[in-house]
Image (cartoon, one colour):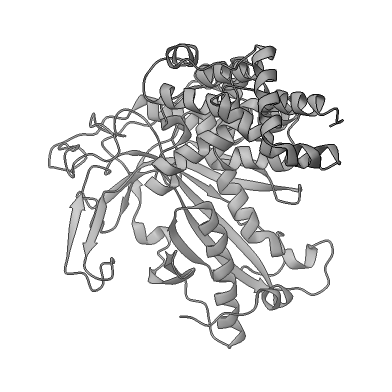
Length: 509
């Protein structure tokens, strides 16, 4: 393991500069230059054709939907959209790209010069300057079989070309300076904001665990210019040598990878050595990076215009039509909904962290209270989703059904225990909540006389507990409530039972 320097010591001597390259797989039905499907998880090499395999004589055709999604991404990132741009061949040996070059964009990206404002944990905002967002195709996937899981030391490698040719948008930031100690947090917040934006645009599922959104984190250090409140002296200090940590696939790992590279590079520089410009591999288990290969510059890729594809020239009218389809900014939407729903900051963080924002919004729109919708989706349904290992939307129950369930509890038809039984039936395919409750005979007893008889019987059977309650130990009523609920087979409102018990004992609650 490489030597590292304490984080505070890093910040005392060095100024971190980061750059982030985020690859987003577009969720189009077909690939970038052919008609092969893009479904995740297909049998290896079952979604390929002569074009994406690079066979001689096969000619590519641009996916119009992918181009328009790229334009929408550029617009959402406040970029300028090129009136005319073209594809290029990026040449170097790809073990997972059979034609030995990647069709990408080089000097003429479709979107350029943009920005994205991201909110940090302390509520401050950092503006991430976007250099470009360009179109390209993904490579295939190699599985290195052996003890290491990497090509070095592998017994053999398996190639799956299903992913080769899937549309990608690579979003490249300018060097991000001035973040100081917050640089790792800026990296995480930016990738998180991008993921939210891609989902809001409905251009990608942005699932980092499946590789449909992945981040390459560039990190360099330069000496601090001393006391420089305005940062003007620091801007004059040349950038340091950067490393690129490839394919980081979680928000937590983005932050950890940047932090680790800062501490590793600082130790190298403090030891009088030079940082090597290279790509590095991220190891989730140890939280460290290891050397990959020397980092190539643009000249090494021998870019030249793709001769088999015509330039892309979107009309100004079409660009404006696509601009009109942009959704509300995700950060602004979260603030608006939080205000409408009256959630605390902690409650909203739980909602966003659990991925429940959209389903709660839909549930509230279907008639549920904000509190009820949050309680169901972040509580009971999140627990069931975690146990089943699925997303909330994969449980088999939707916002309308949860709104109905919430209403039945709110109106006094069901208590929480009965509502969970109804949910069991809904998930089992027995129908909507009303039908399940009717079929299972689930309904709170509304007859006060029946409840009063049960309360009187339980009090008579437990005089010692009744005396404790009369003596002021009101919390002892819980034991009596449980017995009444048992007699009523759970079909009673516990709060109402408590009220009846205290009234019967002439005790104020």
